[in-house]
Image (cartoon, rainbow, N blue to C red; front, side, top):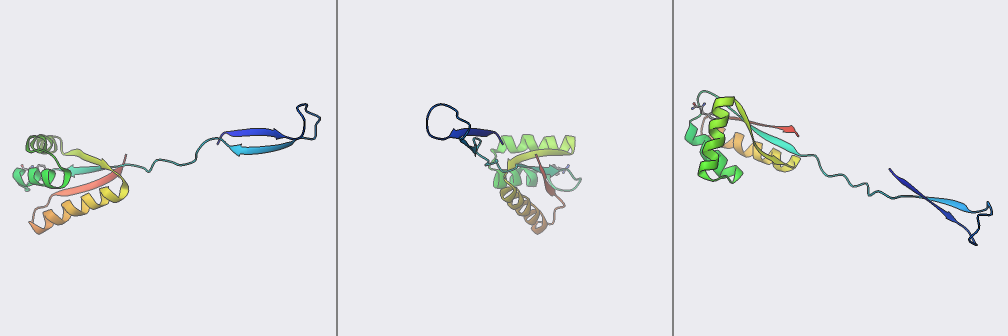
Length: 113
Ligand code: TYC
């Protein structure tokens, strides 16, 4: 990105024979992108089941889980966490599998932040 030019050659005076050495001054490591995990409302999944999901897979307290569940119920969707791609994928798979095993239509998705 940013270049630093170093003049390398014998002596302190610039006699026009110095070689230019170009080095990168900025580390090129980028932070990995983050993904929002979203929980979607539906008409059939019991409220207590959604609360249990938020406690189990997102480490929420009961009151925190209840609050987020109500937000999804009223608004249709809510962000329940922000993670790396791999962790977000795992959370979505865990929720979808748990809901399927209990025969609830609960939907969980992810999107890039
Ligand atoms: N709307 C559901 C009901 O009335 C409750 C619910 C909340 C379902 C949140 C899904 O992600 C959800 N039983």
